[in-house]
Length: 313
Image 1 (cartoon, rainbow, N blue to C red):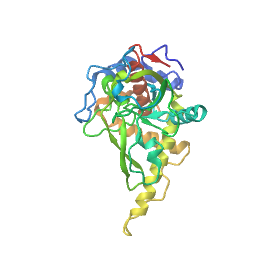
Image 2: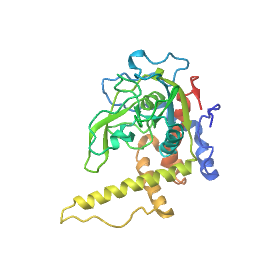
Image 3: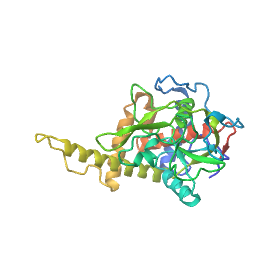
Image 4: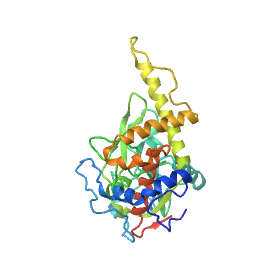
């Protein structure tokens, strides 16, 4: 999909009934999107206050951060709301081209998935500790552009340390450029732990690929991923419980229509608890309103970040 048009709000695929309710307050939604600033972690990093779009026609990366290979590719950032088919897309590229792709997330790299791995993950540019990481360092490097996976920010609906559910464009852009390094250990749940690094410079990005999936398909896929992680958590709770504790073996959220509806209801209740989103009360009849809200805000911000003239597909 070539993003030659940048609509102010993204609901081109949603059900007619949901759209009719949601689009009644497009102007109000846009005000909500633009007037609240999400709190960002203070890490001694350079933040992007006042910068909200990728620059166009910027100079290439500094020679001090180039990989020591015959050619060093430039970054083509792959913007995707989670569960849009990004991992599948990148795997196809690696398998058909025999070249590597890259990611902002260390846990997705080949090295991080090795048992008891404790080293560093190769970056796309040597000498750059906060640059994107190679998915598979054993594959050849592309000669022109390397596709880098990022989910940016604003897709979880979780508020931490007083942060806002509403992401302005500067915070969103910063999230797109923030890598997570390998923390060299795994938690009790067996998951790979990551450490948030400072964002890399937006001038390193030369192209953007913006993936959009049918919103309902996207939301259902998010439910399946949540369900997978939820079941793992429940098994760990049962395994670690004492003899005096019992955990329910009832499947609260089965992989069925009812399980999906129950999940949506819980997610909606969590989001409605935010006073800054009282506008969403007008959409209480829309199933999974919380997920539609996150999807819409995310893609609105993605369209904005690419409105500065950068080559976008």
